[in-house]
Image 1 (tube, rainbow, N blue to C red):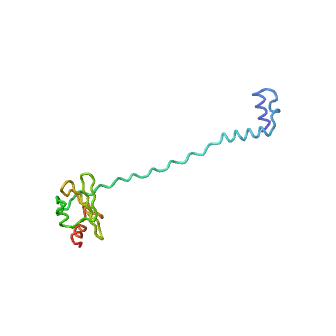
Image 2: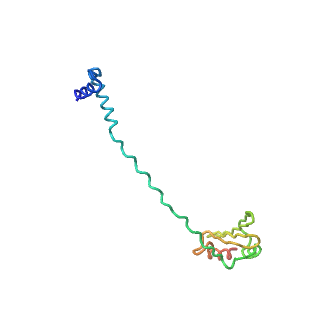
Image 3: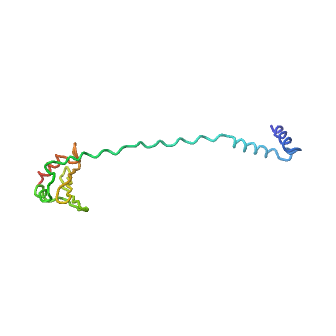
Length: 138
């Protein structure tokens, strides 16, 4: 093997170039060349994209008919004082609590505009069972 390398070196560079370089240097050179010729492992596949989960649709805005359009005074007369109230800009939010649920009443101006309960109702944002429980509370 070294003889053939020496022969190639003689033809390329002329003279006795192969005798000038020690045999261990040729071996090292061959190992470096072999390492460069090796194929690199393929890159790992890209991670799978996370599935896109759509945002669930909002519950239908079915307002409870017995509360639609009430004034704050009428709601206070029907359910008593709220457990919590807050004003955000032109909207007043009143929260009523029972052991089983919480009801949120949103007033815009002097009229009830929206009712929600936690947990939500089966067909809308307000659970009728929660609203009935509010009327029965002391």
